[in-house]
Image 1 (cartoon, rainbow, N blue to C red):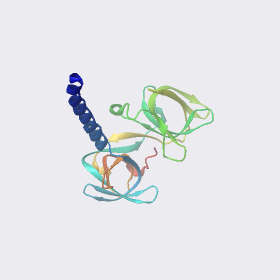
Image 2 (tube, rainbow, N blue to C red; image 1 turned 45 degrees about the vertical axis):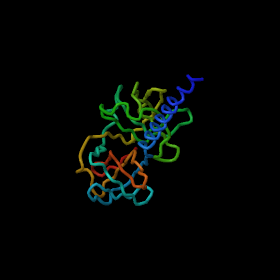
Image 3 (cartoon, rainbow, N blue to C red; image 1 turned 45 degrees about the horizontal axis):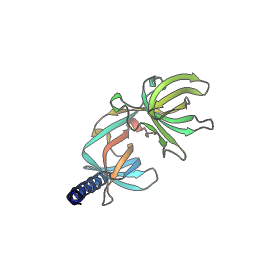
Image 4 (cartoon, rainbow, N blue to C red; image 1 turned 120 degrees about the vertical axis):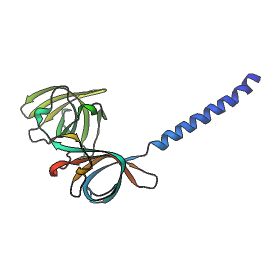
Amino acid sequence: MPKLINLMPRLAVAAFAASIFVSSASAQQAPTVRIRGTIESVDGNTLGIKTREGADAKVRMTDNVAVFAVVKTSLSEIKEGSYIGVTGMPEPDGTQRAIAVHIFPENQRGAAEGFRPWDARANSTMTNATVAQTVKGTDGQNILVKYKDGEKKVVVPPDTPIVTFVASDRSEIKPGAKLIIFGAAKKEDGSLEANRINVGRDGITPPM
């Protein structure tokens, strides 16, 4: 019994420390919101955005916000070993028909790797993965992509928008530009904050 009594305070301290750790981790993981739309105003660090759904949103950019231009590129830039994101629609045979493809810069290899539901349109998906094989087919380019938990066969029709990200600066952020924010953090007061903005260059609407 004495040993048990001596052990109890240690267990209590350990449990308390664990609860603090869990609470801190939960507090740091604010829910995020994906935003697509058009920049209507720029006031210091605050963006006024008309969302794709027609709503008005205010998003505060962090002081060290990363700005990437979304620029057009070509299907020929997708090579074996490229790390890409495929916005797709599932086909009956299990393949994905691409409705957009974005090529990640090398320093973003591995970003959000995997396969998941997406909201580009109803029933759309997103596959972030490495190109294992690419072969020209009758309906377009046939691409096999692999990620850590599996692989997908993708058909890329000839008219599919192909874009890439180019590191840029706040000069891209101006009224009229189209953007996508993959994960604006929703604060406890309901406000939105973003540490990365992806802006379509030359009038492009980010297609992903």
